[in-house]
Amino acid sequence: MLALQEKPKPITLRWYQQDAVDSVFRIWNEDEEASPLIVIPTGGGKSLTLAEICRRFIAAYPGKRILSIVHVRELVGQNYMSFRKTAPDISAGIFSASLGRKDSNALVTFGTVQSVVRALERFRNVGLILIDEAHLVPHTDDGQYRAVIKGIREMNPDCKVVGCTATPWRMNSGNLCEPHGDAPALFTEVAFELSVLQLLREGYLCPAVAKPTKVYMSTDGVKKKGGEFSETDLDKKLNNDKLNGEIVADIVPQIADRRSVLVFAVSVDHAERLRDHFRRYGISAEAVSGETPPATRDNYLQRFKRGQIKVLTNCAVLTTGFDAPETDCVIFCRPTNSPGLYLQMAGRGLRIAEGKSDCLMLDYAGNVVRHGLVDMVKGVFKRGKRQKEPDASDELKLCVACGTFLSRETKVCHACGQEVVSNGMIQDRESKLFKQQTAGKIATQREELQEFSVEYMQYFKHQSKQSGTPMLKLRYTVHGEPFPIDEFLLFDHKTEDGAPAWPAKKARTMWRRLTTQGKPPLTVDEAIGRIMELRKPAKLWARKDGSFWRVEGFAF
Image (cartoon, rainbow, N blue to C red; front, side):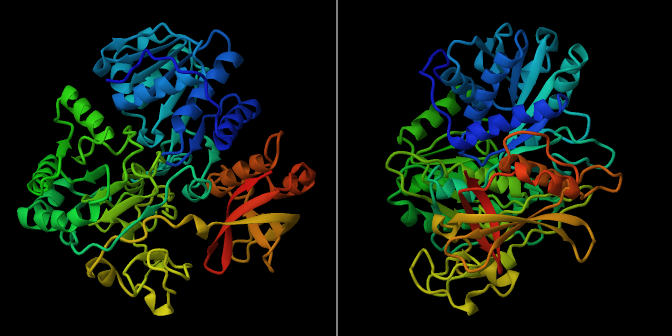
């Protein structure tokens, strides 16, 4: 059980957490009715970011209360403790039946959506609803999250909403900031977004490394529902003693020097069978699922965090809300077509911890092949369109010396040090999925993100040759690179009904990063007229994307 009554000393936010908070309040200064979304990768400290938003809101809107809702009790405890660190003098409570507490009179209440939705009358005068794991909120006007928002806004129409997530899309409906069919978007725009790569570069996430695997879980013939693999079909095809035994036999020698190993399985029975195979090798292992009694689950999780359980298998319960920084090995035995689920699983191992140099990731499920390296995953941004079958063919290549998956721009293999030749490109999906390995370089190494000193910055009005859409071209001349690095802001990009499209919203977010005040422009012409508001970055971080550079972040 979490020590919920503990009140630690306040802490200092990281620069990007502070920037995210500032961006939210800046958007509210521009539009009081806006519902911003914050995008920070798993392990980047979303809880502290939300806690600081709470503290700032209480100061800015006296008398208004805050309700922070999540779907699992573990996140309730984490977010509560983060707030106590940030604002120990502001009253806070917990409203969660699973935690045995129903506090509803504090200025800030942290609760599970399942408990809150049954007691909305106890949350009058709520001025702000915070939603962690915001990708769980559907576009359609149904579900418990939507019921809470609707119910509280009926009592207080001015109630604000802020979301936070590592994956700003839903597989069945796309971008969280875009409408889906006739359903409007809940979140108006992204206030702040940070890449996995930049957190790796700055040491806020640990690098992920991988070794070749000799066994592959084929999904041939597995049916899909809403684009995702049928869990029933996965279990029937992949959960058998022969395959389970072969996988565990391949895992055991590779985790000899690992402390805490987290395994994702396709079903409860699958998790338990994998656990039993590990035990046959004398390895301490347990399995957790939604069927595990809460007290037993808490016991297993705490023992895992203390290193008393080496292998913890699970089915669908540790993808979110599970914070165990000591986890130094993640094993995928659960195929998924969802880029969000893939990133959530991988993120369990990316947190930094004392004595932890990296996280080993073994992918028996082919998820790396489907989605690519964790810092290059493409989300589901097409509104109203079903995502095509995921395939990262064009983004990956194999090191022919050691079989490691690498990004296509990599010239020297990080695993074995060999130069990667051109014939290392993966030729077809079959060779990727059924060769001697399916796991590889799960996350691009930090060295592949390059830091440049910006010498000067230029601005141009540019026009797309294909669509004719005007753009603002930002050109950075940087030290050590013979050619400039360009970035394009598409303020004029509209949807069919004339509303700002996703590229325009991204342009607004970038404008805020490059300025300190003022509402972002609505058109390129307006941006040109206000060009003197932009700040020249002192540094920028970029990575090669084919023959071009892609900007990942700035420092001023």
